[in-house]
Length: 231
Image 1 (cartoon, one colour):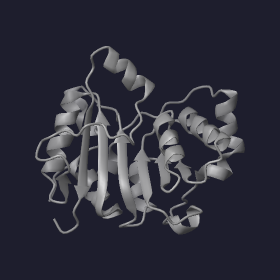
Image 2: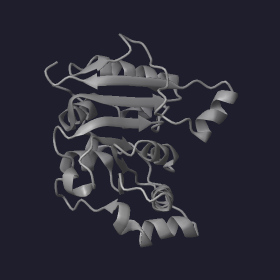
Image 3: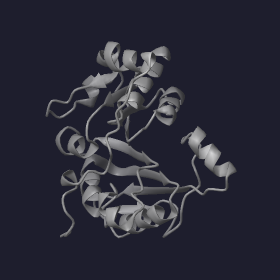
């Protein structure tokens, strides 16, 4: 049994707020009913939520939504569910999704751990992605990092057998922590081989932030594991 505190009692994010642009406000308010989901404590039914019964990719903390938008546009045969508390990012993504007339993208503006606990059915997610989560780089804040054994215990229930976990970070120390935490969990196996980081797959778009970092010589670590229910 893990001795870690339950993640829902430790915030792994800072809820940022600020003035919304006109486009962000339109997305957050006028277009919310087209793309937003209010779970209200109920389990989601993906077959009713999306027009087509395709595999579901869940992304936690999508920020301004650029990469999630691009993935939804490029993969119309997949369904995407994004969770984010940053209102400007949520509004922006919804506005852009509407412009592109997407039907394979839905958004929840809630705490991801609470949503996973209360609203995502077991064995329902084919692909989980977490790109550039807050590294909480100070040692005394490491307990706030979302990738902990208790989070993986929850995630493995929600993923289908052989479902994929894809995490990317530009903090080497956090990459090492993520690698060690996943490798020590009996239900996850490294797709690249023991303690090997993956190359960025084509389906993960290169963000402006990441491209700028690469020009400055900053590293990015992609970590891709598969979920093994019987492991």
